[in-house]
Structure formats: C-alpha cells, structure tokens
Image 1 (cartoon, rainbow, N blue to C red):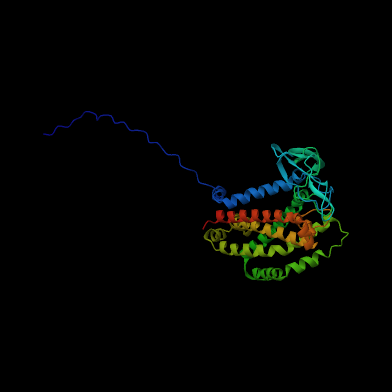
Image 2 (cartoon, rainbow, N blue to C red; image 1 turned 60 degrees about the vertical axis):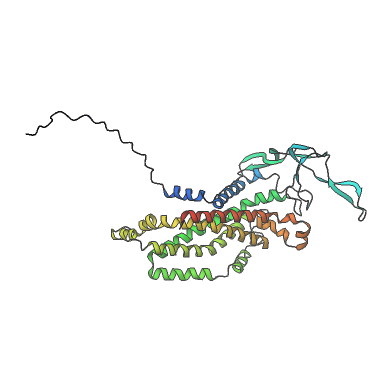
Length: 379
C-alpha cells in the first residue's frame, strides 16, 4: 500500500519581476526633430535662418552705424587689426583709418594714402552710437558692436553717398525678409486652400478651377512684374508701393503651390480612413480640416522653406531693376542698383557686399528645406 506524504511543501521564494520602463510613443514632431538633428546641413540652415531672423528683428541694434549717415564716398573697407603701430599684439581689436601722408607719389604727385597708426579706433561690444528706436518705440543708442568712441567705422566700406554698406545691408534685411515672408504666407494660405478644395471635391469644379490655375501659370511672370509695378506712380507713398509689390508677387505665386497641394489631396482622398469618415456621415469641412490638412502640412512646410529663397532672389532682381523698393526704404535689391556699371564694380568691388547676404539667405533656407524634406519623408 502506497503512503502519501501529507507534510506541506517547502516554501518557495519567488523574486519580484522587475518591469522595464517602456518608452512612450514618440510624437510626429519629435520624430521629425530627431531626424532633422542628424542632418548637419539642415541644422546649419536652421541656425543661419534663426540668426538672420534675429538680425532682421534687431537690425537697428546690430547695425554699427546709422544707415543714413554720410561720410567719404566709396571709402574702402576698414580692416580690423589686433596689432598696434609697433606691431605688438593687443587683445582689444582696432581699426586704422586711411589718411593722406606727407609723401607724394613720384608719378602722379598726389599724396600717398596710408594707415593712420597714430589714431586707432578701438572696437567693442554694446557700444554707444547713433540714436534709434528699438521696434519703433523704445529710444536707445547702444549697438551690438562698433567703435568705443562713437567714430564712424566701415567694415564693408561706403557707397557713392558715403553711407555705411554693412549697416544698410543689415537694415535692408528687414525689408527683404519681410517681403519674402509675407509673400510666402499669402501664397501658402491661398495655394493650400485652393489645392485642398479642388482635389477633394473633384469633378467639374476641379476641372474649371485647374483651367484657371493653368491660366495663371501661363503668364510670363517677369514682363508682368515689370508692367504691373510700373503702374504705380513715382510720387506714391512707400507703403503703398511696397503693398502693391507684395500683392503682385502673391497673385502670381499661389498657383504652383495649389497644384502641388492638389496632387497630395487627390492621393489622400482615396485612403481608407477618409472613405470611412465619408461613410459615417462626416461633413466635408471636418474631413478636410481633420484628415487631409494635417497630412498635407508636412509637404507645405517643406515647400515654404524652399519658396522663400526664390522670393528673396526675385525681390533682389526687381530691386536691381528699380521695380521693387523705393527710397527711403532699404533692401538688398535696392542696394545693388549701385552695381549697374562695370566701372563701379571694377573700382569699388565692396559695393557687391549685399550679394553675400542674399547668398547666405538662399543657402540657409535651401539647406533647412532639404533637411526638413528628408526628416518629414525619409523614404
């Protein structure tokens, strides 16, 4: 006969299970930001765009001089030096202005121009200079950098009227970037709305609307720009002229954006969750705003960053021809009017300095746009 042990089983110790912390779901914006940080060109463009916007917002503070103050015409750029007149190294940077010496040129018998080492102009940050109103409201006289004694300094030389080129280029960034951002905002608003509505409803409405879009795209833009801007009289106020230029650029620029958004909308309108929303009776407005618009925004953001450089180049080109901004406003295109003759460029090459600002701006927004495009759609 079998005997069964009725004693209780020995106690067993169970170690508590350690649950590993699960990572939360990453949002779409965080995912795009993580991808963007891996692109050095995208981050370089983002940093440059941020610096350009800060320079434009605080242009009066960043500019070392009053952009309307006059000095010697076509003065060459002054080179910053860290050496005194004896050649010893010094920590505080300084400038040496050009002056006529007592020696004469043996051929032309003109005074030889050289550096005035006896009267250096010390440089510093947050120096006192020309008075201005920050944001047009707050009186101030401090500048980010410049001469410590308030004397004029010309890092990029002067134009034909003796105005500082660097200060005018910094102040001009405000108008150039304002025109570009305003035009792109209007173009994006109109183009996105027209594209989504046309692609979603389709049918006869889409056909006729696209024929109108094609008519706008068929216009030769450059002759039309010149013709429309020439309609404004010279005596018109600067604000009216500037508003008309923005209107003309916006009226001719929204069509391309609408075609791109329409193509995205046509693809999204056939996705299952959009058809399910239609089946349950969701309104067209809700479907467009809740389902189609968020999915189109990624493409729109990239298109905006790539469209801003084209507007900056267009404004510079029209300003060079005299059809964009009129004095007393300052823009990069208006400054390039001084380079209309080859003799000026050959004798005073520093007048081309605004081209450098345009190149940096175009590179910054293009690099940011490329980085965003790879981050939004890595495949």
